[in-house]
Each structure stands twice: as structure tokens, then as C-alpha cells.
Length: 181
Length: 405
Image (cartoon, rainbow over all chains, first blue to last red; front, side, top):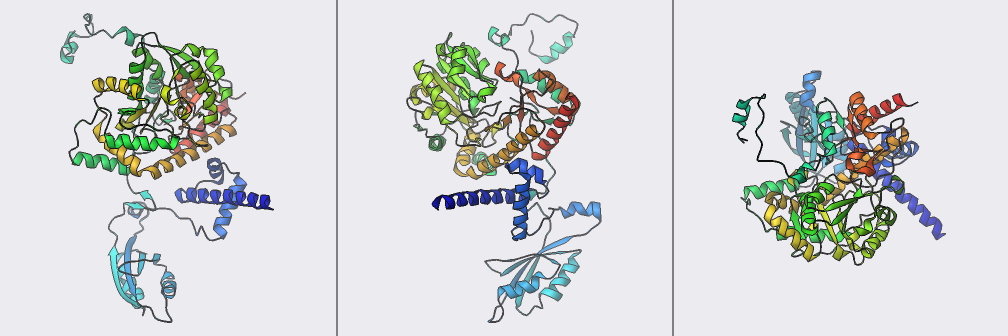
């Protein structure tokens, strides 16, 4: 009996390690192929597929996205992107909690990210739009009028240096000598 | 002969150069340039080469360590330190070594040097007398043999074998006649093979050295880059501490090659002797780098662990790819090298490496550059980003397939 449970927990440990390792690799680069993930982790391709499918279906992995430098994207796509960080203060009552307010705000497609934070304000909102005026209009016409919201402070993003762990810079040449002992 | 370049040029090419008073010593004349040099020159001549020939990390030193170096400069800490290095640093080095069951007194048994290379050179000059024999486990880092020669000693190559996974064994020591050696130098985890040795595998080597009264110079510069099990030091084995000098440093694990900082751990007498050489040649290791190293030991363990994790993924990736393309490669478990056999139909690693460079612009170093034991193999470094590794393996596979019967 105890042997069996030991074996089961050993397997569970291996699963946990595989999940953590694959999650880490997908965060690093979600475009690694199943074959490459298998080569890097020592798992079989089938095992990788199964673990990733499990991470997806259980909601641990909510989606995959590219990390884009929109300033550079503008020059090749004509698409304009303005980002703003918005601080929101709210009042709660018996019928309305943070969840309820978040549920309302998160539905707006302009809202890219929504977080409840500690400190001087309650919600941190990331908004993406085509222009500053559209961001302003969205905040003043859609967000500020929400009855529980008592204050908004909008910060336009002027420049981005690092996002999701990626530094936005010219890719540095490898300045090491090409062959060394 | 004039040392003034200007007048040399005026003399013109056609004129016979005057007899120089600056004749290289016999010692230097008898020392050929590193076998890696030629390959480096070939590679430099070509564009868009993916080099798997690099013997240093592709990561940058952790920012906390770099920031500490910058801050020390801002504070004007630009003077010499104690010969043996800042006491703060020696204390941390001694404390850090306890991870490997090594216990050394920071005052008398630790010396900080300009890279592990300087420590190894100081050890040769401090411990080796003319006529002494230093057994060198091969394949190995290129500087051991010249270092012994510069110190006036003789080297005795001890070729390790692919079938032993390039580990040292009493059998290969015996076969090479190492019982007559005064010292044995080796490096595990190994450059160029990526081999490691566990405490169980080191034990018989320790017995051999005790039985034949051989001193051990243990280069453990890649200790932190051990992927299966824990790194083990021979100095932690019974009665080995007093006959061993351990070399380590910050170049590989902390990606601080250019800061030139290493150290040696050993019994007080040996370290005192090495310090005698060090104080007259280097005086003290670079001060700025010492401040970086203090911070590295205080706060950069996470970065080291992350770099190790990245190397391990690449290691597994590269080993899988060699396996898929049918190239024999033993499972390297340390450093950032794998050491595959030269694929059929080639027999000579140098010819293969040059043909591969020519055809596919991928550089791998022929194993023979690291001593006779490396013949028939190639060193592939995975201190290169995964994208480049993938592309290099793709090209290598194409090249190997094209030439297969």
C-alpha cells in the first residue's frame, strides 16, 4: 500500500517538474516546436503534447501572444498604437465588490490588462487605442461614468524599454572571439 | 634593431633585418602556438559563421555584479588590494566552497588571482622544480602543457578514453606511467569533453595519488555547471586536502571572463608559495573585479542557477540532435561542451572541421587541439543561443547526410 502511494507521488513529482519546466519554456518562447521542447527537456514529444494540452485545458495557460515593439511596428504596418496606464479608485458597497467592478471593466475591448493592486489606488488598467484622443474618450465616456469609480488618473506611455521580460533594444552583436580555448 | 615602428618601415621590405637583441627564449621557441589559433584565423576570414567554438559564456555577467564594479569605481576604489585579495572576498570564497565539503581558512589557504589561469600558472611556478613531472589528463585546456614547460617541468600526457566517458581511472594513470609523476593536473567538469567525475569515481584516483605520492592540481572552474548530480572535489576526500590545490573562479559560472578573476584553495604552505610568485608578478588581482565578485557571491546565485538551466536545456537539445543524426556522442554532463566523434566517412577531425566550415559555415574545434586524447572528436560549445544552435545542427545534419555512403 505504502509502496504504491510512494510510486504515485514519485510520478506526481515528475509531472510537477515537467509542468514547471514546460511552462517556463513556453513563457520564454511560445513558438518552440513540440520536438524542440522534447529535445530540451528529455521528455517524449507525446508527453510534451499531453502536458501542454493539460496546461491549456486547466486554464493555467490562458493564451499565447507576441511581444511587440509597437513603435517599430508602426513603421512597417501603418498601425497606430497608443498605450495608457490608468489608476482607478472605487467605492464598494454591500452589493458591489471588486469582482463585480472588474467584471464590467474587463469586457471593454480597449482594456488590455486589469489588475487589483495595493497602495494609493485600487485598479491598474492598461488601455490600448489608436490615438490619445480615443484613449481620453474611452476613459471619460466609458470608465469614469461607472458609478463605483470615484477617480481616474491616466498616464500615457511615452516609450517602452522592456516588456514581458524582453528588452527593446538593437540586438547586440556577439563580440566574443569566434574560437577560444 | 629599432623598436621604433617608423624607422622599421623606412628600412623597406627588401633590406635584410638586423640581428635582433630581442630573441625569443628557447622556452618560447619550443612552445608552438595553440592549435586553436589556426582554426580561429580560418573562422575569422568567413562571414556569417555560426561558431560552436567559443570557450566562454554567451551570457553577460549578472547586473548586480556589474553594478557593484561600477559603484566601486564611482567611490574611487582603484588602489591595489592585499596580495591574496580582499579579505571580504576571501571569506566569501571560503564560505562558498563549503557547498562542496571544502573547508579553507580565508587568511592562509585562499588566494585570489587574475583568472583561474593565473592561479594555475602560479601553482606550476611555485610547486614544480626543473625535472619534476606533471601528469596531464587529456584532452584538456590548452594552457597546462605550456605552463608546466614555462615553469621548467616536464609533462606526462595521460590520455583518457571515450569508453571511460573521458574520466580518469587508475588504469589510464597506470598505463601512462603516472606513478612516477610529482603532480597530476586535470579539469572536471572537463573542457573540452563535458565529462564530470562523481565522488565515487574520484575515490580510486585519490587512492592512486596517495599510494604514489602524487600532488593534485584540480581545476574546477566549471564546478557550478554540473547537470547530473552534484559537483565533487577530490580535496574533500580523506587525506587529500593536504595534497591538493583547487582552482576555481568567476569566469564560467558568473559569465565574468573579461573581469579576470579566479582563485586557488589549498594548504597554507602551497598557497604561501603561490603568493610568493603572485606578489612579484600580479601584485593583486584586479580591484574592480574583486568588488564585482563579492557582490556575485552575495546576491547572484539565482542568475547562476538560471544560466545553468539554460545551458542544461541546450545540452539536452544538442545531445538529442546528435543522436537523431546518428553521430556518436557520449552524454556530457558538465561545462558547456559536448564532444562528438567525427562522423563517417571522415577519420580526421581537422579535415572534417575545415570541410564543415567551408561548406556550411559552422565552426567546431578539432579535438586534437586539446591533446592527443581528443583525436577523432570535435568540441562543440553550446554557449550559444538556441536559435543559432538549432540552425547549426540543421546545417551539420545536412552536411553529414550529404557525405554519408
